Length: 439
Image (cartoon, helix red, strand yellow):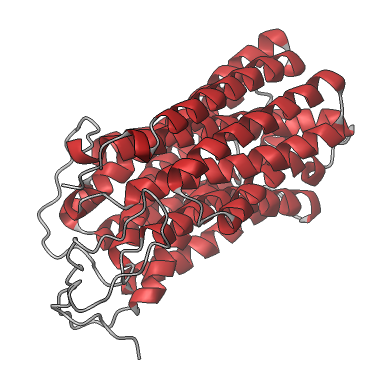
């Protein structure tokens, strides 16, 4: 029988988890463990609820790339241009950003469960719209709804992860968030590509799978404990992204890691399949997506392997590795080498994962409880701006310069940004700065 966490528990009752001596990493032992109010309904055990929050993050990103292998089919079927495809992608990306700006901190006020239930319900509706789409306009509507709901799911799921971890272990929370994000992207692209290539109903089956997964997550969210003890009424008011003064340096470091890594992700998920198809001389959707899948899954694996690395070391070495992988990818575009493309995808993905995790771990360790959703919303604003803006610009430029030249230009820019991030993370390492306050 599922059990609720005992009301009134606190950090005094639960011993902290050692940080393994990692610089810049601290367990949030100073933050009181959330008191979950008594309720008549049964709820999921905390560990299951924690896994559910990670799954919601992964599912949101899984869904974000599900339509990607179908865009060529859509463009042929409904006769739209690469510019239209770019606008469809932008509709999704800016939907995410709009929610993060307008409602990023709503779950701090009304609770995690109501926001997760609403977000997952809208994601289910968007999956149905994709399945019944019979014109380009349906793609815009479905992607807009998907973007709006994903913004709410990501910020709320990330805040819930920290709420629900029994010891507030920043290393484990950051690892769960990072692996769920990268793994969701990679698995989403892989599963969708396989269903499109091998399935009998390619424009329906991927979204049917999404619908089932979202329905399962919705049921889990209904039964999860509510970790926000004091809730207020719903207010939707535009708010400027804000980060408490005491944690601005960890937020800056996390932002540096995500700008370099997600910029490469944006380039890959927009132009990568076309470049891969050209390098491998194939129309097979699975092979065309191999670079994007390799990038995302190597990012997830690298986080599991190097998660004990000090956060500032991860941000520095990860960004440098990301730059090296991107340079390999640019070389592949210049020379037409499929081997260099795969090698660059794996190396760049490893840098992607370590840089992302290094910054995120240092950030989640110091977020005050009352600012969790707001700070994670600001973090995902940086992430989605990094993912979307380069992809949208590249989608416009490619119509004028062509695929190879666009990839060379944008890949070089991403490599340069990653090198700047590596230098900045090294320059601002902990032994060069005063201790960071968490209040």
